[in-house]
Length: 191
Image (cartoon, rainbow, N blue to C red; front, side, top):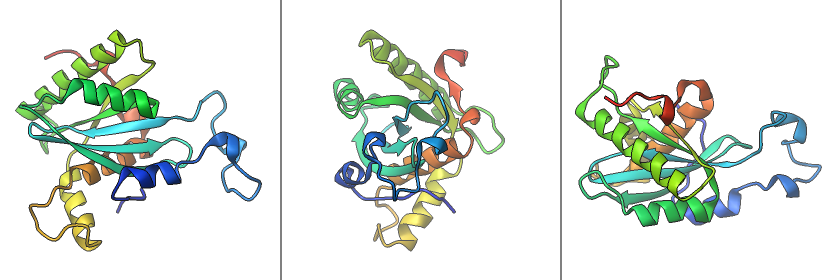
């Protein structure tokens, strides 16, 4: 089961984000719990797909993820201006793109497209001079787990209801559990 907190919309993410500068003495989070030298930031997890892409925002202080949105994709391509705008407006410092590998760990056609998407995203944020790192993280079985969580919590009423944003939350949880499992996009060799 996933430890992340899930919500249905982005206003909850705004309302529940913690600003390190406004922490009070009753908070469980202290400066000592944050790694020295690591600045707290927002991470955007993307559950890549050809028709739609799930998005979740993660907070490095609380290490929780919140469902954010589902973007329409045009044959694997997002509205780039919209996606870059989201990254700018939210002050995202890192993007984690899901890598949809086969169950045996081999690449699939979709994982090759996800690689290409992540490379393009890294290039576009570089062109905009944004201090954003792009990495990829294994997302096997996130959709199955997301559907189970959504069904159990009553978030979906039909098995065809979209769960891509919840899958992105699970991807974020995987990343938070082991940040070293992600691979920086500049370290990924083009296939």
